[in-house]
Length: 477
Ligand code: ADP
Ligand code: MG
Ligand code: ZN
Image (cartoon, rainbow, N blue to C red):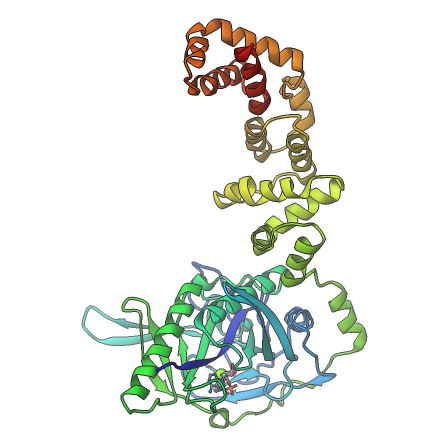
């Protein structure tokens, strides 16, 4: 039997801010002592009052605008109440009815095509503390609480149930991450827990049947796990329904080791949280002026940029995706182009996605864009050959370096003068008389050997294709 999956994704992502959402504590970093980044507000002590973080609000408004969502003229904050030791106040400050962004969409491209995933809402809330469960040497269990993360600004983004397969779900999460990083709203490092993806999954017998009962799967720590967990969950639900059972609405965890999901808890509904407006914070008015300043500062978003690279610059969809997929690569590409408007964009794209990304992957900083453009220009005009270009690129990565001066001073320019090439060819032929005999006896590999010798003699400055022609002409004469 064929089942049709319905998937909706909820993402929580830590915003890139200097301080927490409602106090001025710094954002905790790896290795901080537990409870060292806390104050009366984020510890939930009686009498402490929240003050909203303007930068966090602006980042969410920017994200909203970038996905085509609407911002409310006025919003309020709400208390989401529940009792758990990770929540010192007994409630989390969040937003229920007036999210900072509503009704947007994100374009997602998979191996089978491009589609729009509608975004239902995006709102701001605060993170909770972290619990650590331990068993001491005496065998007694204890739970420790670290409030460093309590009050860190989180953006929650919820899709409509628009996704129909696990690959699209993974690609949606990747595209959202890229968008957030491009805008500078978040770093969204999934392996550091800065971005948490939860998938709501149900299945139904046909595309027009009503939605089935859904489960919510969490604890995936990579994009690959998101795809695997959803695929697993679809198969698990199909097995239940085909065996005559029914799916229970619940929250399930992804177990990385066994690559299966397991029951965590029954699914709570929003009325279980007894939301009510936060009395310690006044309503927030979003003026048109404020919003337009934020919108003006938003850079070109990835889907638009990819489209422009293909239609305006003539890059392949693949090159455009690789370039745009790394904000620092796209930044180098743009910066190099802006220093030399006549640069050959395909050669530039090849150098950014090839040499530069390889070096960046090994930890290299981006090179000076003007020098990089000079280098790529010299290669594309065939002033220097690719091998020389790569050598110069390595030097350019080491710091300040004048590419044009190095080419001139060291005489690196490619030999393209016909007379010089012929002299080089004659020299090599004279040094290897056996090769000429081999060629005459029909051994064609002799030509490749001679070109190799000529390239060596020119210290890599010859043009192999041109040398090949010149040597062949001499052999045949
Ligand atoms: P909750 O309040 O429990 O978080 P929501 O109604 O806000 O529930 O939906 C959460 C997510 O689940 C959304 O992304 C939504 O698109 C998705 N969703 C809702 N119903 C289904 C369903 N039957 N199957 C799959 N996903 C669903
Ligand atoms: Mg939810
Ligand atoms: Zn604090």
